Length: 406
Image (cartoon, rainbow, N blue to C red; front, side):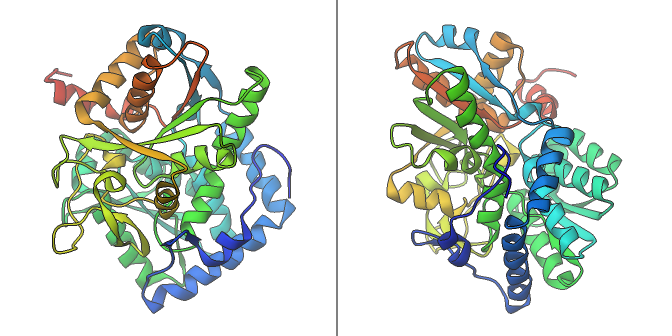
């Protein structure tokens, strides 16, 4: 295995059982069990194959543009009047977000398994664009499921997916958002499992997906750790990342888990308030349950049914969360808080005006929390934010919400 900044290594215990404390597991129909076992075996073989690592490392460097920069947001830090805010610039990756790290890795796995058809789900569209990009690069057939509501508010990414050769399949059931897109992708996979690989975009779903996605995304945290030691001669005091399904946060946090002095804060979508249907914050307001094949924290109604979620951010508008985040919550290793719609919009504008950077609305949730933490701390403290994506995709929706003609 390569020892470069982009190589991966898997905890053998998690690799085998897919458990994070009491969370995780595999709760799926028999139809999918064999496909998941095949994926587990192929992933394990790939991790031991230097050729796989070398090809992935080369793609991440030459195609994606890694390592992504570490950036000192000086003017934003001055505005907050306390700690220094630094950004891990995943928004500068090819396709504009962290999602490409995972889709390239999984597309390589699909090719190794001889599966030429790929399906995916998407909310904000960034995973859909990244999947379409990976499929175009490798010559794979690509179908992306996306809720009609998300198609409306993320129109630029829909157009980009189609330009890249993907078929975007609108989902009209339920709330017509990310949860429903995953439902439809799962149905497709059950009917086509012999020839199709499902590139799941976050650290959710049945084993081995949470481990696979976290490992492919952990390049974020490994690079950030190395960059901090080189540029600051120290580790950051606090890491902050937004949490929907949880892939960017898991990728940022996992290489720092053993660094007990580093505080880690995950930021869920607080939406419009704490009542049911007004937020997308299962770690703050949900309860343990099964969703999309995994045991984790889930938003539920009084009858135990999955409850609706809401966020101004399409990528965080999901009633569940990755099981590793649930394990980190219960162990106390990671703190989880919320940021509301209005606060995320304010952080979007603050970063744009202070630094000339348009963050994705998902990332703006983490920026808001970093601003609050910075104001409470001394100037010697360092807060590192995972800026998971860029915000051009959200500009039209923000204009609509602000009542601005475009």
